[in-house]
Length: 386
Image (cartoon, rainbow, N blue to C red; front, side, top):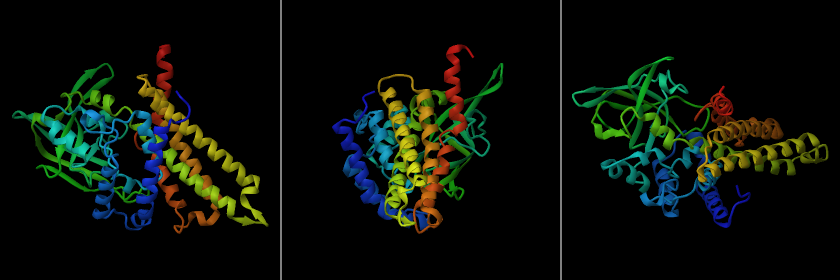
């Protein structure tokens, strides 16, 4: 890996950071108070992102994307991490899994998503199946040449704005030495399709305005043309196109941590107690030293994982390490920043308590910290036959 960014990469990061500071920061308080993003504001962010040339920047040029590398896209996500997720959601980054579209699906789903004409959401998690994907109960069965989908998905981010949803469902079961093993298939389901309902989900203390939704399928009939990838090939589709999503979480955690750190540093440099700036006390300056060290370590770990992908190397362990360390780092940094601010840190007059709340979910979604540790341990032991 080449340490340090080149001129083009620096420009990408600075362009996105400037956009976030100019177009996202001014509206964060409104979203925090209301718990929603006004449609006209969402549309304004979408149009400005398209005009900037960054919509679907995670897609290759041959389908109309910007063709950024994994490392460059990590820089984009890092800078977006500084802002409210409810707002940066409209800095559109469709699911890469849409690259599995074929034939007519490309015209109906892939290309409109890349152009910013349609928005997607990804639906895997269920009330009884979070990290354990194979225990999902949402199932599709063959009826008269079609698929009939029944079941419930929850914690589905972005579904409130989605024009269509990528749904994973069980489509069969195999007997194995370790017990039954479900076969999984991905389907493309349009909003408003008969038998498909989207309703409000749970009220989360993290990322207000970035709502999670509940999806219900009641005899939702789908033709074969709605299968994404191959029948029973859901895991192959996941592993091919969703492989690097944990880098996104890691990168956003780094960006958010840098914003938190900048706030804590500025406060420590101007707040006075006992006749001097509090940053001069070792109890504070040592915390700042630890914070920036943790942030830099997470940053390099994340970019190194992205660089491995760009070089075509296996990066499963490195991605898991980045997601694990960056998400836990963000928790430590936000807690330390709040401590430096003292009692005011817990007041909603300042954004510290919001960043503190927002940090908590990062250790859960896209694979819990425990799942990441499992992946890391497995990758270390497998070569040794253990």
